[in-house]
Figure 1 (cartoon, each protein chain N blue to C red):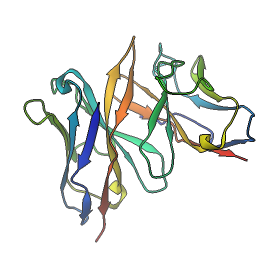
Figure 2 (cartoon, rainbow over the protein chains, first blue to last red):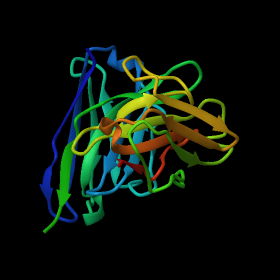
Figure 3 (cartoon, rainbow over the protein chains, first blue to last red):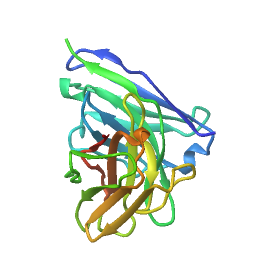
Figure 4 (cartoon, rainbow over the protein chains, first blue to last red):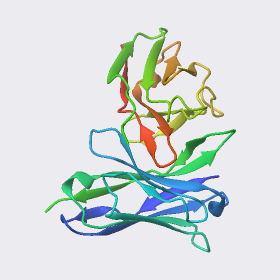
Length: 122
Length: 109
C-alpha cells in the first residue's frame, strides 16, 4: 500500500526557517517524481515544487523560488524534503506531498499525503 | 505560471448532471492528455478522480467523466449524489511547472 506521511510543520516567525519531510512507503521511491503542493486556509491548491526520481529536474513556483529547496533521500530513508527559508505570512498553508505518476503519455498525482500545517506568524 | 481557469461554484439537485470547465493554453491543457481532476472534501487531502483527460482510477464511480476540446477540459458528474459535494480542481503541467485551477465548489441542493 502506497503511503506518504508528511511531518515537520508548525509555528514559525516571519523570516524563519522550517524543514518539511515526507516519508514514502509501499513503492520504489527512486522510480518516481515527487511534488509539494500547498493550500492556504480557505484557498485553492498551489503547486510549490517538483523533483525527478534521481534528484534532477527540479523546478519551483515563482512564489517560492530562491527561498525553498526541494530534495530527496533515495537510500534507506525514502524521504522527500522541503527546506523553507525566509518564511512569510503568505507561506501559511497545509503542505502536501504527492507522487507524480507517469501513465500512458502524461503525468498526474496519484497519491497524496495527509498534509502538514505551516503557520508563519509572530 | 498562470493558474487554470475554473468557475468558482456550480450546483445541482440530486440525480442531475453538472459540468465543470477548466481553461488553459495550448502549452498545458491543450497539450496531449495533460489534464487531471481532483476531488477534495473539507479537511481531507485531494483525491485523484480523472487522469489523462478521461480515465478514472479504480474505485471512482463511472458517474464521473472527463473530456477536452482544444484548450478547455471538462469534468461532468452525472446522477449527482449528496456525497459529491466537495471542491474540484483541475491540473495540468508544462515542462517547468505544474498548474492548478482555482477550484470549483460543488453544492448539491
